[in-house]
Image 1 (cartoon, rainbow, N blue to C red):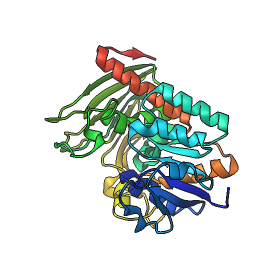
Image 2: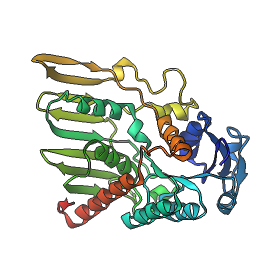
Image 3: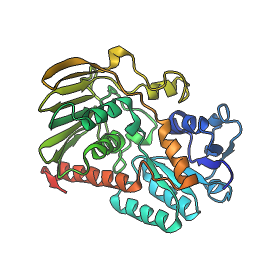
Length: 348
């Protein structure tokens, strides 16, 4: 490998433009060498030094490529990751990891056999609001946890045309899209749940994929509630966390995605910071003194993910997002499907 990690993007849709490309651009350990665009040349404006290719084989057969980022439609993840690993490439794959636990296990084993880095892009572990919740729980500011509730709602009352995300493909929809983030966050905080109860539905007129879920993950002494809907015009709190001493509530979505869409780059002044009126509200007590105040949001930073990938490839550092963790996330999502189908709680 050269002094930089020669990197290829397997597509240049929204995730390539907004998430992967900018984080690679600001990290000197990576050189974005090849970008797969089947017919367009959208990447040339921002990445003029990268070569635009028309086929995946042009990436796989290039001995100079060290890392392949598989950011294609979900149903292509398994095959494209497998091909890249077999070609001797390190792999970062968009969530969801694969469509099944069995596929994920096969890729994990293959990466180990080849001595290659394999990781899933779980960037929302570095959302500022999530980092704030994690800090509150780590410090025990709420006492013993009794309930954790997370929402990731949108208002999209139409069916977006000409996208695979709205087609009736198996395991496509909000559960495997936003649910991959939300379940991953809960597993990061609490480990694997003991039981899963899920209600999944398609609420929009003319919809072909699930656009709503209500999931209850059972842990000893408390439950984690996860909800998402495409028909929420006036959202409530993003997080509501309650304990024996107090509560924390946080509204709004981490600002990094909108900043990236506006063309800003990670690492610029004020990156990931929120204004005071967007901070969450903490109401608890400490040493018998009641605390009722806004709590400053920990700045989010998606760039940490690729900093760790570089360290893992170049120095053998431990991955912050291990593929086994993303496999466990799939295990919970599959339990959600079974719970919804059989109308019962699934014990793990």
